[in-house]
Image 1: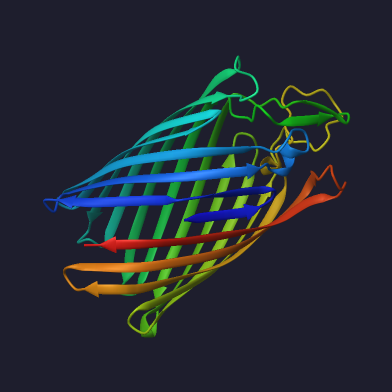
Image 2: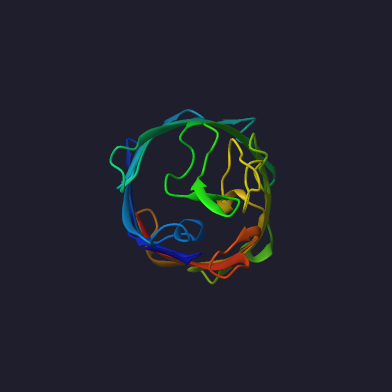
Length: 328
């Protein structure tokens, strides 16, 4: 069960994941995920009416072990009233240098169909190509470090058919470029301490051809309490520089213009925790774990105006997750 509430949007629904191993070399997985969304984000609701919709997502995957390699193939499909998304992914993980180094390669191809619930004649598409590369290195029995890079290319309809921009104070349909390329780099380190404690730190940098620049930093701490409880906590901060064609209220007729607050200048802060309990287990036979997590998120937008109040927009979000895992 997952529940998100914040920024004018409420999303909730069930989630189910099942994984089955076969012959110690093959692992099959299937998942079902539901988002029941109500209301609308602030940049939509100020120019349109609130809405309710439901998104259903299905994933199928297979992992195959070959010596020191794991080959993973998966496909995903999601559908909502005005958007259908399909993708196929291939990932390869290879251990080298006596299993001290792990190299990961990945590729995802996506094709989406975009529509409008209030205009049956509107139809467009968006295509996405994603490439991943990462290295994880064991530096000592208690020190692990990883570095990852991701490249994405997008083409087609990349905006929101319902959102309006503002030009000289008047609402006009937003206009996006039909291509976008982005890059993301991430480094992460985890260090084990005494008494089965561990600390981790990570940093991520993102940039794209729309001149968006984003930084994210996170630190976390985990600790075992007794034999059956694991407690984790983390703090995350992030900031972003706006896209070239973003404007809260443009004072010129531009080729491309948007008022999407996710492409504006903003900064965020998150504080969260997770508790895992080994409810019941028999070594070598089965184990049941109960998991609960909570995250408090705060976002401030420096150049996006809430038209209802006339001030800069900001919101607080609460994320709650509760789930059970059973391995047998």
